[in-house]
Length: 197
Image 1 (cartoon, rainbow, N blue to C red):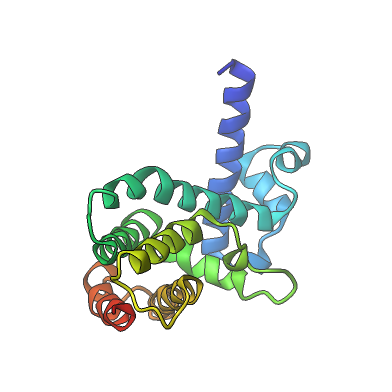
Image 2: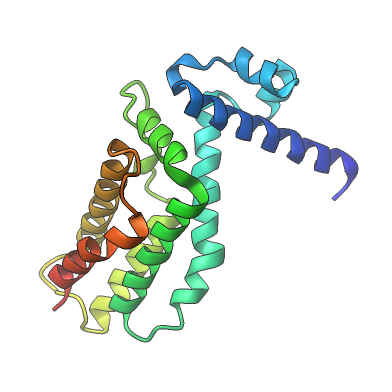
């Protein structure tokens, strides 16, 4: 990587981190692009070189989260023979990452932004890597005769995603007054049991 590319990546990271911090301190709707520029001591040109809008900062965050799932978690769960075990381990590792690495502020801010009715939600982007990971588990789990056959793999993925969003939304509402790592298990075990053959 040359110096120019390295500098551009550092500027993008600086803008993204500062924006997320400002969103946490205030709220997404109250933070302006000008404030982000002032906080980072950059220019409008630098901001718009990397992001089309404030919303794009969250798109980058979603990509970063999905990259973590693909690059860090997929190979860990692949060691498991049973797909139900892969799902349970993936969900445990996901909740650990969200609680320890992302934190309550980021999740709260993400949900605040995602509930904005003026634009489509990043949660609903159909080709997110997270969805491919889950769909693969359900498709192969059905072939392996672990999961029930009266629901399509897509429907089981949808149930899983709604359960996932539910616990994260509840955690955000309750200001992280419970541990996702400790509390997710019962909820997801019940969900997985309901999807088993």
